[in-house]
Structure formats: structure tokens, C-alpha cells
Length: 99
Image (cartoon, rainbow, N blue to C red; front, side, top):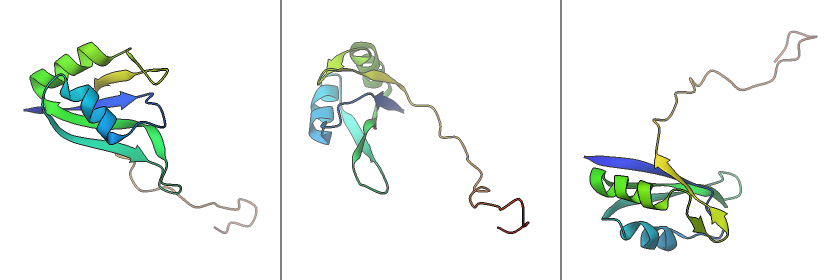
């Protein structure tokens, strides 16, 4: 089985290669997803790393609260993504009853 790990508070200058180097010390990495802003394409300061269960646990234990580039990392098991429903959006002008 594999685990998906949330890695937060990364320096904005962090690269996928740096993340891979850091986590590979604790086991084989299956994937790394560096999260970027949709509009600007800039790195948002967090990523997801997928590893085998035992390696993931070791990485979480070793790397949570460690420093990287002057920032204290937040490393924990990723929670499932919440369903946002797709119902929202738009602005309604309450006075006229129009959208």
C-alpha cells in the first residue's frame, strides 16, 4: 500500500528535485506533485509526495518540523480531498433579481 504525504510551508524556491532528494533518504518515492497557482503558474509552497506505507511513516516522523530554506516544514499524511459540489460561482445582484 502507498500513502500520500502533504508537505507544507516549503520555500517558494523549492524544486521537485530538492523534495525528491529530501524524501528519498527515507525510501522510494512513487510520485511528487508540486502545486502551482492556476493563474500565475507559480509554486504555492506545498506539495504531495507518494511513498510506500513504511517509508511514508518514516519520512513523516523524520521531516515534520524540520527546517528547509529557513522555513519549518509541515509533513503529515494527506487527507482526502473534500467534494466542493460544483454548485457555486456567479454573482447575483440582489436588488434586480438578475445574475
